[in-house]
Length: 612
Image (cartoon, rainbow, N blue to C red; front, side, top):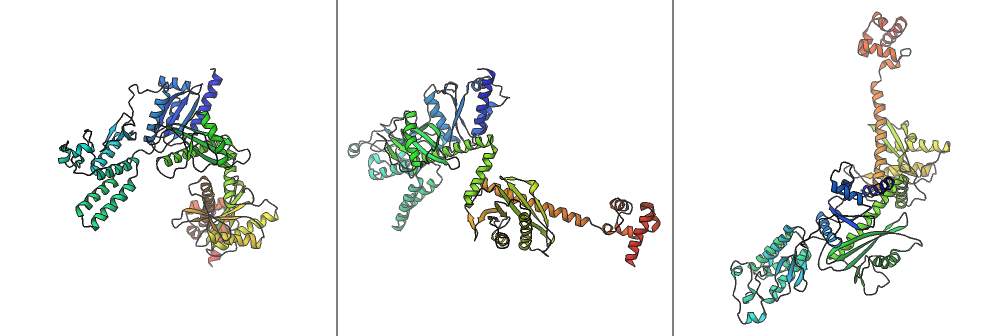
């Protein structure tokens, strides 16, 4: 590889790194033949992956690895623990060249519920489904033991390894062990605990292992209340203790479960502005995610989501040679696949997998969008304008937006400001300041009407282009007074929106229409942040103008009103006499020393004739 090719390779990789999300997940490095050569996990994907490409990296092995990387993919998850589980699975499956492999074949432990007459519950690293049902694996050993402890405390399953049978119990073959005397076991082996009661406990324990603690708590609460009604207070107290113990219980990892095996997951996320769609594919084998990819599909004939999935699912399954008999999808599809069934989950681990797949598709869409907007900043501005146009149902793109704000203190030095944004960027050369001329006292509504009237009357007269949208720094009241001028007086058709604040003086909603209605835009969205930036800018602009005017007003003195006494003369007088009062008290000789005869006579006669 020559220097030019290596430069292009690094620039391509750095472009990927810059758009990585700051979320937990796994990342995969590929060589020139697109073979996975390294799998890693991260609490923050962007920070971790970018660390490989820092110039100050001095580890030889890291430099060798980076020199071999030709592509990067990643999978977003909800927690670092989940990333650890997926990393473990991928390393075992692909055995990447630069990963430390687990030569001894050890894996994370799981919890087994055996298929015996009286099932046992214990942790193990050996998975053999003939012996029972397995839950896990657990990357945090402490979490696994916490689950086992809560099950032992609440349900007291047997710990002995005797092959207990119904016939053996009837023939009195067994004797109670120490665990029974320590009250850690109900001794089903000697009939002290019925088969039905034991099985009920095991079923509830399985629900806990699945993460369904709420349902178990509901059952325990109902049993507790029933016992209390029947005055069986000791039994009610036992159920109460179980109920309380479950409240403090931390559930298992959300990602992996041995109840899910050989499953495909598909979700679709739309890009409304480019008419594209992003389809994410996740494959689960032996209860663990081992593949996660997102593909971009271009709509050619305005295909629906269902029609796109109809085309994409067979194509992606063929590409990955998937023979999974269960396919999880977000909605019903009208086609069938041979030897496979579609499933739309409503809850549980499979629902979580669907949500995880959608999260990865949205993240991929976001990353592609950011990457494109970085290369072409105008694309971002156009997108935001289209979002605003769609939210307000505007007749055309809001290229020019104008926003007004008043500023005064008890009606004094009243001013207003108008800021202009073009293509979602401030156009400072078009900003305008206004001194309020016709309003006396603190009347914001009338002041706003004066400014809006002056602004657009002049624009009509000078035949300037009118704005595509007016935003008021206020709620329904401000919108209405602006509308009265724009529509009723000037007969203009300019859309008017308002940004209203909550009782903590924080902008919390966008208003539009007549009468004004709240527009559903998330307050943490990029568009809403731009709108609040416009509001903050007009507020800053009006306040700055008001402060400057007030400062000049406060600095005004009687000397400013005397014709013939200029700026230099005033400065010289104040430097010598320190105040206007002392200038008034000065005699003609002292004034002459500072100003000369002519100006001193003028100043002396002004003060003394005024006083007289």
